[in-house]
Image (cartoon, rainbow, N blue to C red; front, side, top):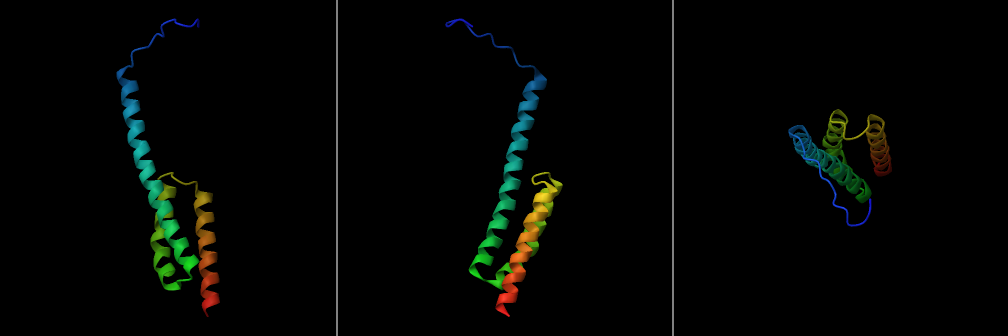
Length: 100
């Protein structure tokens, strides 16, 4: 297009405007869910890094529950979520063995 030529804008139809609204809503909800999962994992990792077995054991259940929920909501792929759970379990078991 030559410089200075006016750009033609197509009027957005009702369905396009609805799709935009749906996308914004989904984006917000996905961000909320992703943040919740990541925060739970971060708290558990912090407890493991601090060497606090009791706190880590208390956080395992809720953290794994959030990870499983993220699988159902398609926030995380199933293999990724299972890898996270596996690595966290291995770290917790190592911490337990070290404390004995």
